[in-house]
Amino acid sequence: MASYIGRRKFLATLLGGAAAWPLAARAQQAPRVPRIGYLSPTSFDAARQHNLDAFRIGLRELGYVEDRNIALEIRWAEERYDRLPALAADLIQLRVDVIVTGGEAAIRATQQATKTVPVVMTVVEDPVASGIIASLGRPGGNVTGMSLMSPDLIQKEVELLKVVVPTMSRVGLLWNPLSAGNKPQVQNAEIAAQILGIEFRAYEARDSREIESAFDAVVRESTGALLVLGDAILITQRKKIAELAVRNHLPTISIRKEYAMGGGLMSYGPNPADMFRRAATFVHKILKGAKPADLPVEQPTRFGLVINLKTAKALGLTVPDALLARADEVIE
Image 1 (cartoon, rainbow, N blue to C red):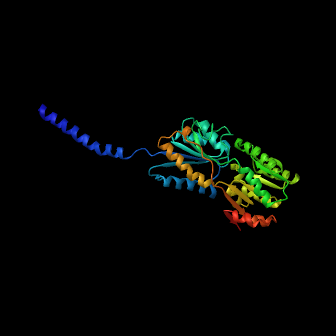
Image 2: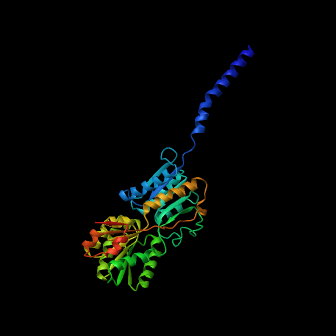
Image 3: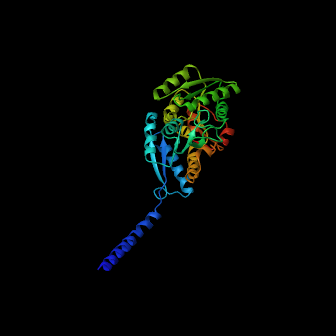
């Protein structure tokens, strides 16, 4: 009898173990899917969708398929910088493997939320001058990615305005003082104006109301043309800025293509969508074990000039044929 009971226990153990084999096999076939946080300081619109789509394209080029072998957690701050810390903390609580974000405010909020989760930055103007990273070659900490600026970009924009408005004797710059990354560009713009023998004025604008006040000052001081920095809030207000510029017969230029597309006279700078596509390469390297501190920050090497001829006509300007021939895109 004891022998019979023993055989039954043996068979039950054997069969029970056999039933567990398929479960174990399935568990081995389903490794953890990496989770990528995507934090934007802006609202969802066509331009932001374009950047997000570009990032997804970059991931697919590297073999990542969303909801199959990678997951995205997307958060929009709706131009409310005060929401960024909570959104960054939410992504950390979700145990994301890396966070992709753009703009100084979003990057700083993420840095405050974590010192360990890797962060891939995009469209930030000068991360070294802003204190986000130690250097381009050895960023240190948990942040790497791409810088929006190159050393001569602001000077090139002033030169382009001078080509379109040869009589320009004073250039202004519209910037958001809430973004510390804009401060070095104010200095760069002033230096560029000095090199070209042009007077310089800086105008602060933190919101829609201050944009209108800034334009009142621009008109009052007879400023001949205006640089618009690539701050998230200013880009979100691009149509309002373009309308005020046309109303006051003021030629403008911005680093961001969306500005010219929204009615500004010109834009000159790197393509943000291309930078988001390249961000996928940093994500791939980090998921393979690379440390952000050891991944050099990239600077843009390709720049695009967009000219809005419709706006030029509204301003009563004639854009030289030679400049039109150099343009990557002409809006008519």
